[in-house]
Length: 319
Ligand code: 8YV
Image (tube, rainbow, N blue to C red; front, side, top):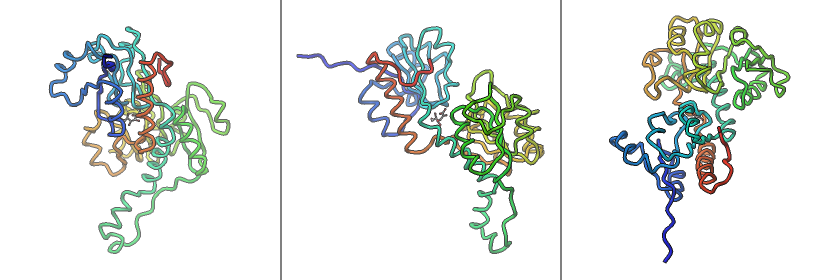
């Protein structure tokens, strides 16, 4: 009689949609960290058996989790951002890391541009104006600022920043960007090496940088002041790229005109001061949140896990 083949044991940090959960459960023995009442106890019990971690971009895997998994070989991230994974802890032990680049780029760029349009044209307030009867009782909705033909700045011209720029070109915008070096694939756009110059240029400043310890608070109080009272900051990257305290202060006192944010420090428990501000559009970290993209992300997470356990090359390694 043949022995049943044992499946690799993996730790799942957060929930996935059912269309990912079912194939994950059939390919692996899945230990669901997010369902555990006593998470440290759960890690102490199962950690030594875990060969891979499946996590999400914003959840990552911290050093304590990685150290509890003494037989860990791979961390597969559902998301392009891997800043929440303790990369040093991985490198020390030769643990591989994968993410889900490319498959989400277009949707993230779409949402960033939609946020700019929505906020600049006051669409949330306009919807309220119709629903609460203001249109009938008060008349015309207050005029808002145009997007077409104005100046855009893109802080970080990687995959997502580039797609944002392509969309903005369709709005006839004057596009500049900051990155480590000028990009040959963006010939018609102005390269400004200093982020402060970019902020001075931009009516709309898009933050599309991959987050790391080096980029923490790159958007600081000085930079926010350069975007100015007529300007808007749109963040579809990570909250840590912006000094949130300085951002809130600038939004409160009007030294920054507006913001449109998909990411927050401590999300989903965002700073309650945001809720009192009219000049900020708040989105629940869903830039990659379409059915099409999330299905592709889930498949890539599983394909990386499967490739690893089959001894094949990883599809999208970080390292
Ligand atoms: C996801 C993300 O929202 O790609 C990233 O880095 O943050 C997102 O796509 C997240 O990982 C889904 O849980």
